[in-house]
Length: 181
Image 1: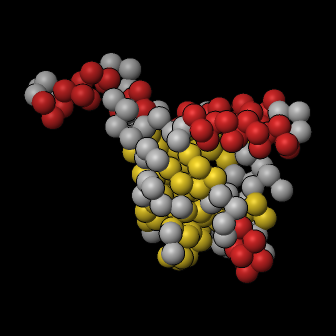
Image 2: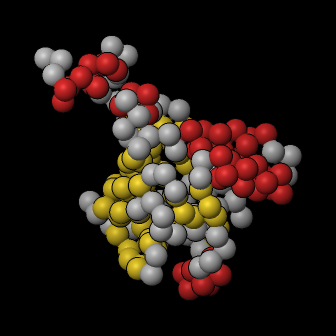
Image 3: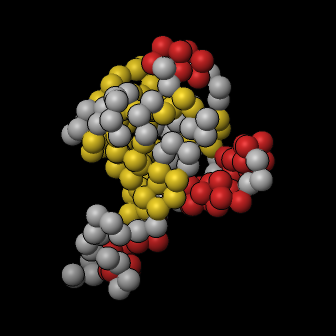
């Protein structure tokens, strides 16, 4: 590397950066219907982006939400994933991308009978820490009400708003269960 402006940020983190991430490498948590496999943390990219993978059980719906700080780019690795972003809805299979811009209410779900898996690029980085903290809340909450309260608090901390909009419609139309049910 030369140290010029384009590579300088990577040189700053390359001392500790893994440049190969093995398939089974990284911390994993389970959120009652969806997992989070941490692959690349923001600290490894100068906080430009992070990468997680989400294995999703069949018929599971992620609560509709809106990010204020980051955009998400999901790449479908396995299965069929339904998504609603604003007023648009689609189903995507392996090799497809789902773009979820900040400021727009969105949700996604496993739309097939088999497990699904997406690779998610989060830009800028930082939101992976929400998932990490949510995993701890799931492990330590004494009951579902406490978990939902802690999730709401984390949402405020990470500028993430949750909505019940679309839940009844999507669960009825596609026979889905909300995460945690």
